Length: 378
Ligand SMILES: *Cc1c(COP(=O)(O)O)cnc(C)c1O
Ligand SMILES: [Zn+2]
Image 1 (tube, rainbow, N blue to C red):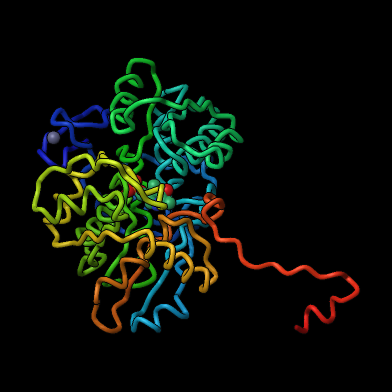
Image 2 (cartoon, rainbow, N blue to C red):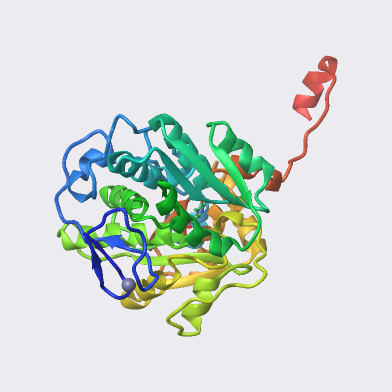
């Protein structure tokens, strides 16, 4: 059964994605107990809306939780990085895509699609290819060739769409229904369920006080929130951590509406940020997320591009190379003034190799082989 988190209406059709009121549908809360198993799907078997098809798995999830050696000490915090760049297509999107594709196969679809500027496109293309499904990837006119190359490898058909990117999301759902293409967009109900694994894995290792979540459409945040809420309802944790949605100042429709006390988000005009993966100007889960933030007393923080790039550099000092969007959590950390010793987890959402054109090129030295000894010593 699917339910609207904003108006509460319920739907039996599991293929449906949005409520009549326009908001995204989600599954009811699942309760259960953990088991022994070799991956997160098996260990949290009671919590998924569909039986995970492990033949289809590429080993998504079960990513490392890495303790900071430098930044945490400097800030007086117990800081951890949840390294989602270790997923099969180098972002957390794989967790949700895996369940979405499992559902598409079960429903009998021959084709799937997504609306994306990068990471989700690569993820859906990879899993569709593995499942033997056709993939239709709709991207905005401005999508970079660098990102699209990582999609074409998997044989997906990529369509650059001219026109309003916010409207494209809704058009894709409408046409998908007509043409028999199952769209696994940013807040598809199965995708949200897949993201819960991040909360489950964190809770297996520690009891965090605060989780920092780079936020664009709001799908990732809703998934992690639902995961922790289900753990609490199941009696597996005592308290919910404080969740912080982090946006880029140059595109922060959710933080702005939250600050102004609005119930609905408004389109963010002329978005501009280096953090392309969190630059959705009209987030489809924006209103659902506002409701969550208010209900649980959580936070929304917007950070500047300068702070984001500084955080990206600081992460490199910990041996981690993430894309700008993924460094936003660390950028927000400095504004939060958390109590000394707080246990904080920053979600590193995607790999820096996806955005090499943004990466700074360090100094390289040239050296004739004959003088190598001198060059190495100097
Ligand atoms: C998709 C994505 C996000 C944001 O996720 P939403 O579910 O759209 O809020 C953050 N970082 C990276 C690298 C992403 O690919
Ligand atoms: Zn509704």
